[in-house]
Amino acid sequence: MTRRVSVWGGGFWLSRKTREAALDAARELDGLGYSRLWTSGGFGEGVPSIYGEVLAATPKLGVASGIISIWHADPADLAKEVDRFEREYPGRFLLGLGASHGAVVDATDAGRYTKPYSRMVEYLDALDATSTPVPAEALALAALGPRMLTLSAERTAGAHPYFVPAEHTAQARAILGDGPLLAPEVAVVLDENEDTARGIAQEYMRGYLSLPNYSNNLLRLGYTEDDVAGAGSDRLREALIPSGSIERVVAGIERHYEAGADEVPIQVLTADPTSFPTQAYRDLAAALIA
Image (cartoon, rainbow, N blue to C red; front, side, top):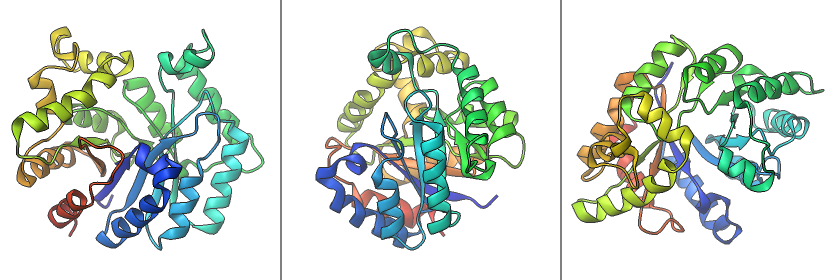
């Protein structure tokens, strides 16, 4: 599979306040040669409008949901939107689905989050049963553990792990085998001030380490309870979040390709998540995209 370099983005892309800036950023990313924009959404609203707006605003840039929650989005509504995107923008939209997290799901419906693997199988079956079934090649799963990774290879185009070090990418490729897409998100900090880079990375890590899906995955990889406590250890931070100079950051991203990734959606972390780090993505494109 051809190596892809992509972008992962959060609130900047979803907020209406930054929508025009986001579409301008998407046009530049397309021109720089990035393959795809991954961004989250789908909590009770089906497919967020940003997906269609980015597809309409750019001639080539792919768009992927990373992820839409299977607890919040109706499969029939999703299938209709994916079918529309395929007719209007052939081959450019990838529906990324995920089981989300108990704390997120139960916050709106206490006790609902049970048996996420079984729920994912049921959801994929429901997509297949719609009047416009979503083809496997237009689907990917947010997969961390072996069962979900195996399911992603069997039922979809592949897997989109999030918040993982390169050793997880290697294990995921071994489980997926050759062929299925493996697109691990990699967060980076492009800042040569060590204290600033550490602070930005720790702020990001603290929230994700509080979610058992992520912390348990890291424990399975051999990290310790001390590594995943609070904002995480320096050892874990260095494994998860390439930081510093452009050379150090690129080397950290390359470790995922060497471990078997086909595509790396890069998330540039900054002290101000409401603005887009344009220059950082320009520098990364110059270093990573042929």
